[in-house]
Image (cartoon, rainbow, N blue to C red; front, top):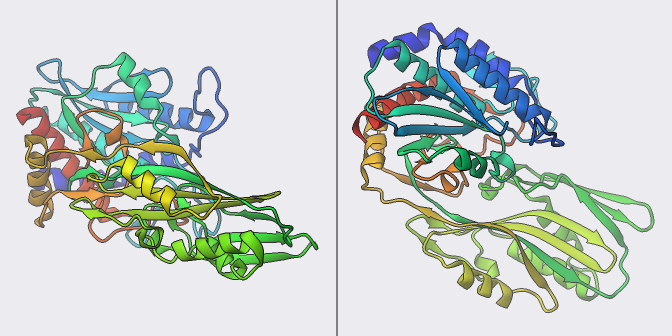
Length: 429
């Protein structure tokens, strides 16, 4: 591995130049066209990634302008997959560097998608090119797959599976290290809170999106005045790192008269913790604690709507969770399931997991025992893969925020891990 480590260092500037070609494309989902089903940005990023793969001498292909791949052939017709995505969330404001330009400064790389997920999946592509250069003998082919709809529901992968068979095994570098063997289930919910009385509030507007805890909102009053609220943004799968403006609004409004004030008092209560304790649904197992994220609030005539996401442990039955939720709603409230993702649990003793654990320990010289996550990754969509990378232990709350970053030395280490993991999976699985 010393040779690989040195080659990565020697090629680092070139790798960064190639990554910058993809970072500069604002690949946020847009209006669909016949040739760009997820909009012009994701399609352009896909074309650029495939062009880079061809420049590296790899065989490429794509499915329905939704998914592309680069492949190094093995001896049989099975393949190992490394699946990542090129679509990104909106950049937002308050960046100190240009979000759609790769900035390298003081040992860090900055840019929208540098961690989630352009940097990691391009890193896997560079590792694949090194395997080709070294003429490594492979039992199975290795395919680096570029998705373009992960941030909006992963509708790209069913299209891929209609055209291609699933991999024998592999990973998605869109979670964390060490290898992830369990992903908690996810329910995206809406609570409708109807009221009959007249109130002084007219509407609520804010920086609301399912992917993060909101950090800014406004309450518009019927007299024309506006009350501003400022908090701290965090990814929706790390709500404890944020300062939720929904709670601030509820705390201010909980003393209002009538049913509306009671609803806000209830919201202030359930938002006081992120484990669901105050909502009566707290639960924990080996995959971790239940996690509650309040991320949206809307007010219209006679109706307050609350949007929230619950990530629940793998042994908790969804039906039991929904029943408890309904039992603990205020009188008159209605619960709607907007979307759901089932939990994922993989046998941590299976050979694929063991290979990735061994690789991680060999490269990092730290404990590689399998872990769990609150994240939702492509591992739910493509059979026989798990999350493996890119965030190292202790790194949280980076994606979906301004000044998204990836440490240069971590990226180099990541490419080493990809190289060895792909090699061993293709030779030993």
